[in-house]
Amino acid sequence: MLANVSSSSNETFLHSHDSSAMSKLPLDLLCFISGPSSYMVSAYFLTSILLLLPLSIFILRHGVQQWKLKRSTSLAATMSHTDCLTYHMVTLELTGVFGFCISSIGMYGKMYHVFLVGLYFFSFTWFGEVCFHVLTCMERYLAVVHPVTYQNLKSDKGIRTRNRITVGVWLWCFVGISVMMEKFYNVLNFVYLLLALTVVSFCSMSVLCVLIRPGPCDQGRGIKRIGQSKLRAFYTIISILGVLVPRFVWCLAWAIQFMAKENLNCLLMTADLWFNIPCSLVLPLLYLHRTGNLMSFKKGSQ
Picture: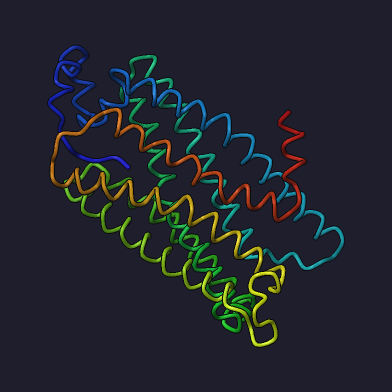
């Protein structure tokens, strides 16, 4: 999300504040705290906190309640792959909300080191969020296109593999923020986005082709005859594809501009942040819909 580029339009702002503190910030980050673009960033921070904080807490609380219920009734407490990915996603979102709060304090208190710490938390969320979206698409791909393989993944060995992958995602988040200020970060970010877009597009289109194509027993009836699990997969893929593809394409366009070192418009660059909100909401909302708690969350929020 962040890049090491320079922008001559921010030079006046750089010299109007404490140079020792500001020297720690890449010049493109000055768009976040100067001029009209800073109001867009503030609005984004506030909107994200108001939307993601109650949603994430509600889902995690519901997950804990379900886990306790299964234990008390001696039911198998095995968690589905989809739910596991969602719980990790909302945990990441809480990390991002924490970062938004810190950045807001740093922004309005003119404490730019604090502001930068908050952005590290936000970027930590960005790296993991993309991975969990990709894993969700891959999980739906295996469930629909390779159901036998998917059934095997429900075994203890498959669950251990899933857990190792999720640990790897969290480690990748630490790697991502550790190189965020390096010169090669722009290239790494471009490759990361391009790979994610390719995997998401391939998995999603493969799933949609299988779901739309009628089977041998329901020729001509199409999607109306598919089972409930496949119908959920269809809606999941459509929802994720609808929010991820515009986001990845937009981010790739900016990554190309960063690498080309073209002059960047602060308003357009900060507008990129707003693509994060639909992507952050899609998996939690699908979880609430899948578990039948969407109306409960709405009533609780009210």
